[in-house]
Image 1: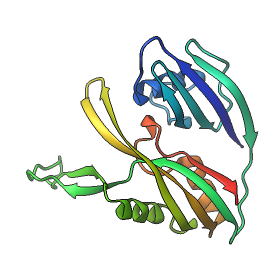
Image 2 (image 1 turned 90 degrees about the vertical axis):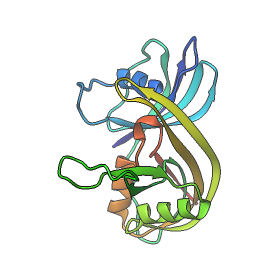
Image 3 (image 1 turned 180 degrees about the horizontal axis):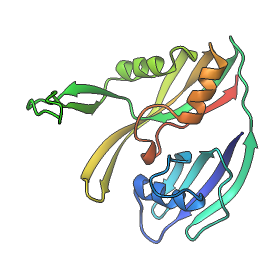
Length: 201
């Protein structure tokens, strides 16, 4: 079963997506270092407030401090081959390139660096590759792009480019699509990327 919840986070000061992620952890009894028990997407935000869609394998605990659970329901998605579906996804399309300065890792190999895909065509091709085997991408419209700046303790400042896709797909392998739904798509899940929402056409 998958639990889908609407969450509101209210803070006296603006918060970054990484801070929202840390606050959402409080809704789950998960020890430090354990796999992330949820995916999330920021649906709307204003100074000091974020409306969030949360997907998890277990129900979230009740409201905790600035984090309020508005509603929650569970469902068990089943997909069949050739089934048409609509989707929404906020993702971080990237590619890996060799380190420009030739720096190496502990194995003596040139380091790989992640860089965002900026071209719209490349972003849609990235999504099609991620869905490959699970579903055929029939249509994808990029509704928004947003550069998210963040600072992580011990790691300094960084930036990701979040892209929101709306579109249509056709199921190829129901179990593989179900796995993508649970695991999320692409990197930066701790910053509100990766949650795939599906609905009947």
